[in-house]
Length: 540
Image (cartoon, rainbow, N blue to C red; front, side):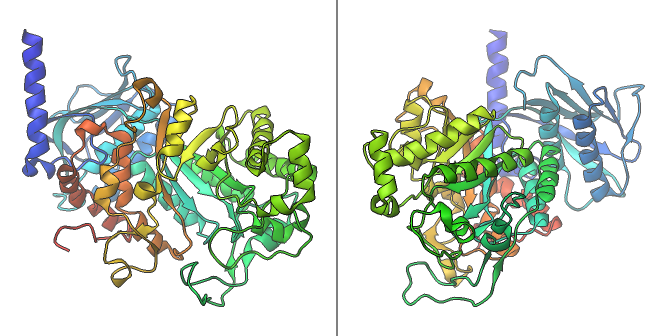
């Protein structure tokens, strides 16, 4: 009976935290922790506070350095490491078997100190992000930081919490990718999906096929109107660029230190006109191709010839050498079949392999690539079109055309990452006012409330089928996004809403509660010079 009473009291306390706006100023944490019990009082971090931790692994040392840097940036002093003679004025990190989840942590802040229990360094890293979000962004008193007392038990709902950036349509500098990784880490996202190729550009240095960076990485100009607008208009400015393998290896390490995986995408067999501009022999027609200057879906796709597969295997070998993650994203979306229908070679290949039609040929193409990558110890992710003609045996499906593809894949017992465009494509306008208050963007509207209201587990799936939904991802496509400033205004703060959808159980979500935390949390954006959109504010 006593234990039930304790549980009930804890529930009441948590409920009070949910509904009283006054408490939001004390705990502006995003994503919302799974369990949070408000406590009275504060802990004062000052220049005599010490840090204690026993794990001296490289990962752990980086995490501790991240906390030291956060304190130094705000208060101007460096926290010292020293054996603790007592349990006061201390920040303590202790491994504890009671913390079961790999990314989970228990955090206790009281007048004497900050105490973190964890299972892995990743869990410590997540705890540090929570502490960082509790550090005031201003009003530091005489070099002292006051952190509100609280008890938190926390772990993520989903193991894959991602953000995709399209650097093929518009090229962005490595410095912006690093800044993006920093922001992802702050909000406990853990997968950066980088879209490296499309009809309008190629961004990965190939040592074996140098024309990819010499030709495919550059277009003569860019359409600066909607892709269906007639007449089309162009800016007349050459655009392009690519990342060297060394730059990308450094980026992978940078992300790893922040417990973020990087998944590269080479989009095939469609969206490949830039590849064909450099190596036209891999197309289905004898033609000269150009890196596309217009948006939309293009007929020019890769032809499933043996030399095409040899080329792709070489490219994936180079990609594997740079990106150590178990996943390689192979695209597979928006593959017009016109060139294959008109190709005698393709029709003979369909007949030779007893394929039903061109959709069967697409499945054959994806199966070939998957088999090769599986042999290299990698698994593939593809957009939900890879379901057409039959799903490759070990493929993970990224469901973007609504939830239908994800539901179908989960029922077939394939892992699924949800990214339905209606809720997760942040290249849409922030506000119904559209281009009256924002730069040109894709014509749809996606408010932050709509992002936040998304529930990742479709009702059509049973409990057992829902286990195949392993992740959620926001996507920034950059046809109409040319600058870092525009990319930031499209991404933030909608990415914060997505982060909470991926971390926090649906039953704990409440938009008003989230909004109250967000208006305080975004003060960190101002410190980091993030050009976030203010259109979500209620007084706008």
